[in-house]
Image (cartoon, rainbow, N blue to C red; front, side, top):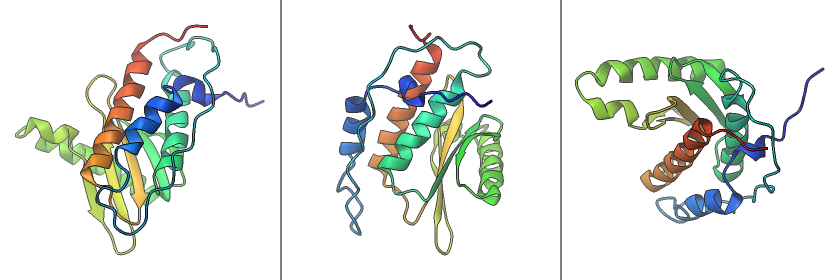
Length: 176
């Protein structure tokens, strides 16, 4: 029997995430205004993570849910440092494989240019754009978004801040 978990319990409060997104509204996107950020439900008390193996999944699932509500991405995913998918919201296998290859190439480039490992990557195709945003240090992971238009730099910085908040939460024990 599949156990359901309230994944929003692992995210920062709604006001913090909404504030990050609100700073990006109206900057660089002349086609359509971004939809208002959906508020997150209140954080209930939760059990601590039972193991390091299962700890990130609920947080990443909740983060993807939030990203889906606050960006206009048609699909999203999170992959680990090796490019293996941790969570996915409708991303085609071809984009998942491509993101893994991009991560490997970025690692190779970072030998000569260390900051390349944290640089966002955008690949434009005929009808969509794949954007990959690596996390900052610590728990290394990446967020991938498939969009009709690339996000601007301010939006990417705001997403990175939200990712940093998730990474911080991964390193802190949850209190019951």
